[in-house]
Length: 116
Length: 111
Image (cartoon, rainbow over all chains, first blue to last red; front, side):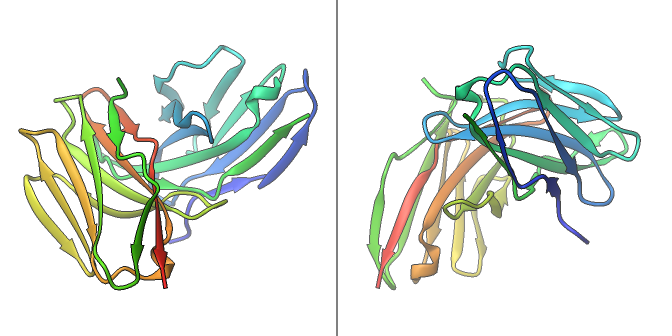
């Protein structure tokens, strides 16, 4: 199976702009989670989507939003970018069997966002 | 206090030695525990997961779980320079739908 894919891999934006990142999960995986990773804060959970619905949300401001499509692909949007949003944004997918969520997450390669 | 704490490192071991990485967690509802390896500039890669108390071995890697002590460890036997990376510990509470990661321990294996 192909792994988790993320596009774009690198992005440079300026303060105040907005950005949309895309994630395609492993085939058959219906849960997609997004994480922000910075040297100072480590890996921080943003949100998780399942069946086009946000299942869980971390402690990030409303500028960070996401959505999931019927094919399980997910997008993450950050509006009004700030310098502190510079980070590696990781998407992870996991399998859902019926109503049972497995715990094992597989990460994509990430999108490196630089805000100038 | 962070929900998942890892020894801050960095940890340096000679090639061929055993590297021991430790992790403690505070959420007693956590049922599954994971170790990821992350090379610089890359994304985390799953190494092992463990659900039950005791040891789980996979090649040169052994994960150990002690739920009573809320402690997870990863042993890497016969360490190789290619094992040099940051190792992330994660605890997952399926009922709460939450996975929490530690800040990672950076391991350097010196030839």
